[in-house]
Each structure stands twice: as C-alpha cells, then as structure tokens.
Image 1: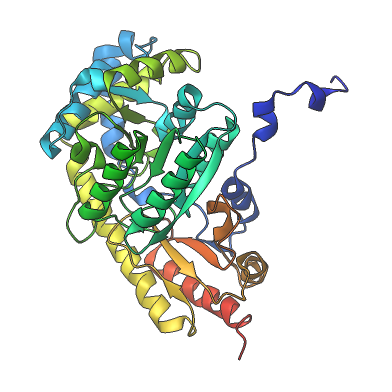
Image 2 (image 1 turned 45 degrees about the horizontal axis):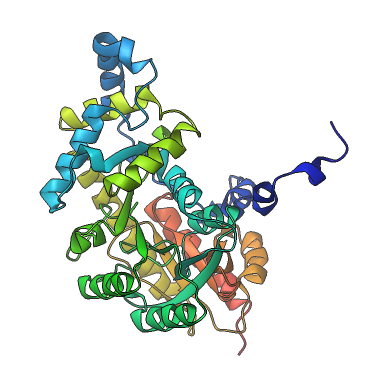
Length: 403
C-alpha cells in the first residue's frame, strides 16, 4: 500500500463517514441482547415460498433478459406497474417520469450528485434520516436544519430560514422531507402542512425531495396525498423503495420526477452502476403481476401493528415520568425524548449492560443537537421481545433519572 493514501483522497472521500447505525449493529450481535437499533423489516414479512415460485418462473420463461444487462431507466414492466400504482393514487405521471434505482439510498446519492456543489445549502428536518444527511454531506452540502413539531417540519421556521438565506444571496438546492412516518420520529405530516411547505418552496423557487420509504406501512389513520401529487408542477422529486414493503435484500427503489430531472439522473446512474439488477427487477414485476404484493403487504402491516401496540403498551407500563415518545400510525420507529440532563450516548452504555440497544438521536441532527433523544425500532423483534426490551430500556433510564 502507498504511504500517502490520506493525501491523495478526494475531498468527497474525506467527507465520507461510516454509518453510525451500521457500526452500532456490529456491536449488538450478542444473542442475549435485544436490539432496537436497526431499521429492519421483520424476516416474517418475507414471502419466501411465493418468491421460490416466482424465481423459477422468471428463469423458465425470461432467463435471457433476466440475466442480462437492462436499461438504465429500469425494467419496462416494473416501471409500468409502479406508474399504474401511482396513477391510481392520483399522480399524473407516465413511464418517462420514473427511473428504477438500487434502493432509495442510491437515489439519495444521485440527487446531490446532479444538484449539489460544495458549500451549497440543503434544507432538512431536525431530526432527519441519517442516510440522507450523510449522502448530501459527502457532496459538500451545507445542511441547514429546521425543527419539527408534532406535524413535521415547521413552516414558520422554514420561511424564516428562507428569508435569511435570501438576504445573504443564498438559495438552497432543495428541501429534504420525509412526510410519511418520518425517520426517525414516526411523524406523519398532515396535508395542510404539506401544502404550506410546497407553497414556501414555490415562493422561493426551490425543489422538494420527498423521501417516502414508509408510506404504505400504515396501520391506522387516513393516508395523506403525496407532496408530488399536491404540487403537480414538477417541483417535487419523489423517492420510493421496496425495502420496507417487499424485501430489502433486493435493493429496489425508484425516483419519480419531471422528465428533465430524470434525464440527468439517468446519466448520473450510468456513471454509477449502468443499471440496477435485471434479475431482481424481473422477479419483482412478476411478483406484482401475480397479485401477491397487496395481500402480503396487508399481512405485514397487521403484524407490525401488533408489534407497535405491544411496545407502546410496554412503554406506558414501564417508562419513568419525564420520558416522552411518539406513537406513530405507521412506519417502523418510535422516537423517545428523555429529560434534558440525560445524554442518550451515556444511556447507550448502560442499556448495553441491561442487554438492550437503540440508536442515540444525535446522529439524526445535522447540527449535533438531540442529545437527549433516541430512536427505537419495533418491526424486527417479536412482540414478546419488544415488551422485554422496553422493560430493560426503562430500567436503564431509571438508573439515570435524578430523584
């Protein structure tokens, strides 16, 4: 190995950071430890027997194309299925508005690749998804955080920040939002709030990146229209994925956007991986065509509701006074707020002693705040382990509570 590796690394490489969550997961592999750290779907949701059948059928009937390179834009049939699905929801799109990506994390990398220069402003929530924050920062984005309330990103603070930046002659490249069961908070943004943020984006002529991996993981309440549909002008870029609603191992996602944006994304993706796996795209398309998707999603959501209910009930039973948490209508996460004097990173060490793990909330804050917060996943563990893990976590917190 050369002796000056650090000196020849690119600026982007030097800005890269290991995923805090992935590193935490390495620490939580002891069999006796209950881990709420990963944003992992339950293996019980994976339709293994149906997939065995579909894989064989794809290989028997379409192996030449399934095992070959595919178009950068993605498998035509899969794109048609997704477009049809969105059109039923009210989106006015066609196949030219959608590109398949290698999960939505690739989308989060491609978007700053085509829009962000070092020093450019990008607006995100406080807190927000770590994978998005990391991807934008790698391209040199200067992340500007906007606080959330119980309904998501606060429009009043967004307006103030946009005015401030305008006075300085600065224009953000885009506003990054996760309106449906936000990661990490679990908050679902009501339609009125979505419209307020869209209006601000229009006023200042700024794109919105709507990240929507959890939209269909809904257990209760009323589905809200996507910001893409509410905007209808092409100012919103919508991201979707099959990781939370089908199988994460397929690494299938997509981007819905104006054709001009899709054109640039196609060129960026060609330079990245040429195309997403033809094989898994063919399998996914066949799975949809056979009518398997909706019944399995309904079964998965029913299971996740039971797991969420078990955890929320356990929190009410075990948590000491002064601890607050969200109770989402869908998604995979609860977000916990501790008394201000408790640092979640210190709590993590005690929690490990109690054989339970979580993600300290500060990693989701682009400004380093949130030290008294943490994210809890309820989808991966069983109902019984959700209850026991909640008890262990409560015991750890009680060890830090001041009387």
